[in-house]
Amino acid sequence: MITVESTPNPNALKFITSRDVIGSREPKFYKKESMTEVIEDIPVLDSLFEISGVTDVFFGSNFITVGKDPSIEWPLLKQPVIQIIDDYDKSGHQYVLENPKPACEKINSDAGTSRVEKQIRQLLDERVRPAVAQDGGDIIFHSFENGVVYLEMFGACSGCPSSTATLKMGIENMLRHYIPEVKSVQAV
Image (cartoon, rainbow, N blue to C red; front, side, top):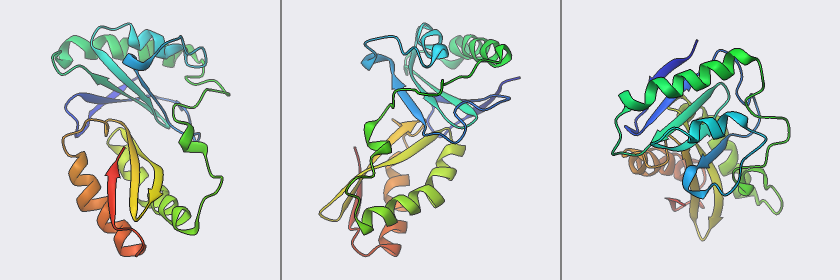
């Protein structure tokens, strides 16, 4: 059975499955507009993108967040999305196969990481990402340059009206408190 939760982003819903989607592996985020080929490692992705109005799909630990075009209402999309995810859930197949292509190369990049970058990543992983995942999204460290932390937002966080407040009032204040080298936070 699929449970549906709203997110702070009115154009994204979180669909919670009865089993792991990606487990403890890194989250995956795909935008329909940037898809140039079929992602064979994630068969359910193509089915979701076949639904008119679906614009992006985010795969979390035990949920899938689906984003929609603002001109289309959820009552038209919700049931077809639930049906696809429920059918796949019942099939027993893995949502994301063992060796998927990363949605964002930066996620797995640790080479040349400074002490400050490691502290930023640790705070994000321990304090921010679990809370944001509950809202159907994720925030990933992109880079740290000249006192500015650059973060990428995925899933419900991407395009969310409250994302600027989350970045500035929440994440920026926390990072500045614990890491004096941090001056500001910007979305990529």
